[in-house]
Image 1 (spheres, rainbow, N blue to C red):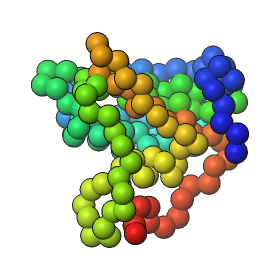
Image 2 (image 1 turned 180 degrees about the vertical axis):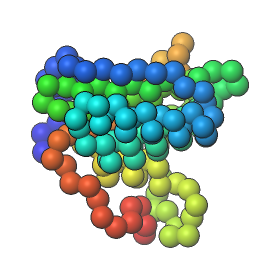
Image 3 (image 1 turned 45 degrees about the vertical axis):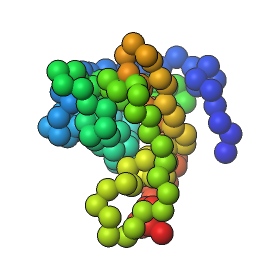
Image 4 (image 1 turned 180 degrees about the horizontal axis):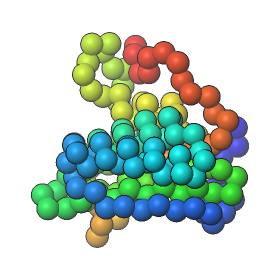
Amino acid sequence: MSQKSLAEIGTPVRHFTLQLSATRRGARLARLLTERQLDEWGESCDAAAQVVAELASNAVLHGRVQGRDFRLALSLHADRTLRIEVTDARGDRIPRLPGPVAQDAEGGRGLLIVTAYAHRWGVVESAAHGKTVWAELVPGRKDLSGPVGLG
């Protein structure tokens, strides 16, 4: 599968951005609003909702600064590539893929799930504004079946 740069994907034809409180409620709302927005755009939303849930949860758990919100941005491009961006205030806490996760562990699978659903993902650091974790989903990629990150 070839990897496209943002320039190759082109200018988004649809865009949605929202500031949300860095709370569990804000993370839950990010997922629900993603589902609603993608439904309005006529796009499937299951994989995107899962990726948003993981990135928003990480922003709340690991990127929260008292009194600061996180930002959700969705950009749908002409080729139907969906770019998801979640920006939080903690630029000093860059996400890393974990090693193997125990089957009975309650956490540690978030980025493994993002990796499984996304065509690609990454982090853009900003000293002034924290960091943005982004993921790109391409049309036609199959949803996963079975557990992720067990091993």
